[in-house]
Length: 170
Image 1 (cartoon, rainbow, N blue to C red):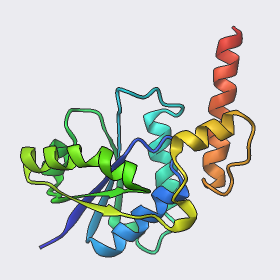
Image 2 (cartoon, rainbow, N blue to C red):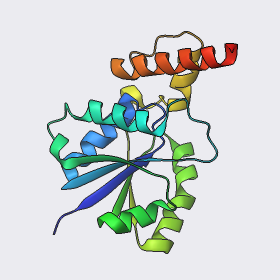
Image 3 (cartoon, helix red, strand yellow):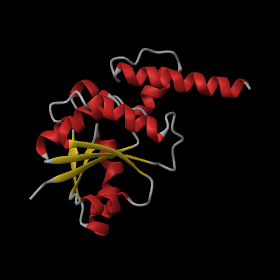
Image 4 (cartoon, helix red, strand yellow):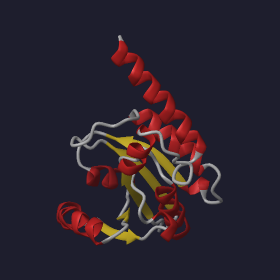
């Protein structure tokens, strides 16, 4: 029997912490689906397609790359995606108690709705204080985020910011 896990997130942008969790999940499970989900409470900097492409580029360097599927999901509940692909586990990176508190309600709801279990993974301590929103804020204010995201992500963030500036000027 093949073990399939889903690593969901908005990944706006994907960070080294996210990539650490994805890579470690791929050493545990036979197949890992990294699912970029739409969060209606957030206005993303990067398009869904860009986020998918950035993750694909980053994970192709992993020894476990052949086990990783990267896709997007906007068509309803994440547990429906899990059912479609036969996943029985969600893998979530958590940095602290606050993350666990936030995730607990979703864990219980996903288990209730579809019998999907959730596994929490702590990122490498070097990335435990890094979040996508913090990376976006530091980047927007001109800070160096190269310790937190791959260079190809910085390049796309810069292009997106420039496009936003040009749109606002018009």
